[in-house]
Length: 398
Image (cartoon, rainbow, N blue to C red; front, side, top):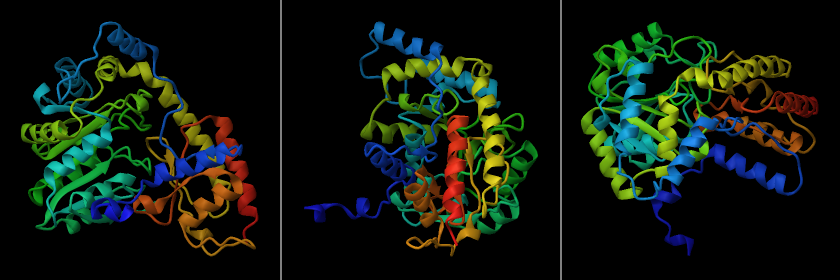
């Protein structure tokens, strides 16, 4: 009966990160110890003050349907957070709370993109952007970046890619999968091009805002000319280790927020009432409360960089944020063993899983087919074990 499936779902690719996690789980269920570097999930627990807010919500019977865009007190708290941390003045009516930042982005894509509209995606891009655009009928326009430029979009490349059909640009910074981010002067150069070159919107995915290693995060919407053109996406999953609570949000021009609320009202309605109360505690907290996580990630980043640099065929840079390494591994293409040949990053990722029991994700899923994404959101012991296993597997290639 699967012939009854819609073309829409048949044309939708499975998320590569979720697919690799599933394969890793299948091996684990067979009793095989897999070092999983494929999922972007902090290995810390949610802070106690956030958990306590969720417990209080349960005890106070917050168990009814919440408003579609989120409780007003949470949206006011997010408004306070935007002013405090990002120098952006969004009212509570300009904020929509969703079931994770992924839904926030999809809401915005569906609200803006018509069939045939072009959507600019600086690559590497987060794995779901491409399929979201296609699902909405849009045409993804990929803008490659290089490891030599730190995987940062260059203003001239952006200028060349903008056309009369450009409707939207989506980019994340710090970036999943590369860890690239932008200083304020770099972001100002990007903003200048956007301001000069036409009437289109930008989704600025800033979910890794609190995990940056170079200084103060600058939000695109805070720059001159960008407020009315930017949809700022954020959430509590990464910075507060709250992936399972499923809370993301946008700050946007009123008309975008209203459209996203309209869409969400027909698909999911409001996000979990309990999770919203926990998220309020998180966004109102001083970011110093979670500084210890960033400190741990920064230490792992340096340790993992040294380990990856010891692997033959790996070309790496030092990422500025998030918790991923994104090495160029194209030097290994064409290598093989007696029963396995590495023709691309997909093959190498599968080779590491089957031969070394280390789960990675091919860069092809992120628009960069010469790379692998490896998450260092795990213990130093696991990272060292992964390096050791990959070293042994690579030694078998000829």
